[in-house]
Image (cartoon, rainbow, N blue to C red; front, side):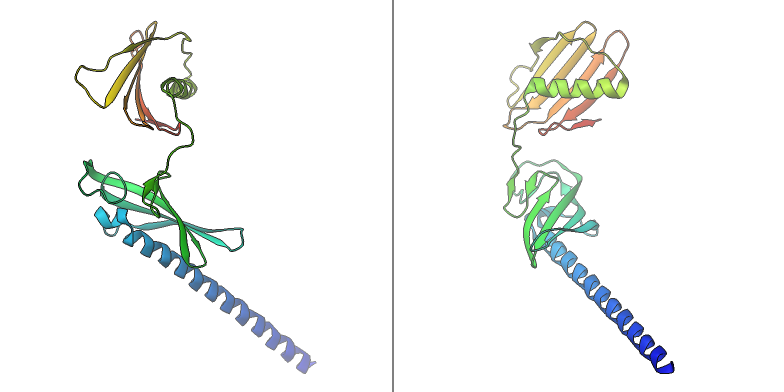
Length: 221
């Protein structure tokens, strides 16, 4: 009986040690993956240009079920200016800007690195949306958003007029009017613009402003 108990104890200790060793090895592997991601970020063009020291935070780490396994690390960091990549010689807005980068690592190599869902840090190019968001599509998206958020019934017929100031190059402004409602949309003349929108009602005093991104996301300001 004593020999049996001793054998069981030795087996139990062996299993516990093996589990602890496996766990320690996994933790070390996770740390190595995170370090690969951090090194990539710090050496990349965006952070190297004007990244703010001590702003880096690892937000998430997970693995995708694939063969080989894909390790994904999500990191938050700040830059001193807006934009991505090496912006030397370009006009950029100054101001601390927060970013999120999602880095995918396979067998120790970075295979994908996307900042803010808009910039390919690995290939240093902007990610082009698959579909172009038309002006009136942006109007309907924001009207649907405001109607749902504020329980408003908007009219269906809009009269449009161009209100772009004279001699203004590179931007346009369109105003839509229906009854007491006015929707004003301004946007830069680029391939995939973001639309700045204001909605006003001269009768009730309702006033809303926000942005519709090129992929259809509404950001209320």
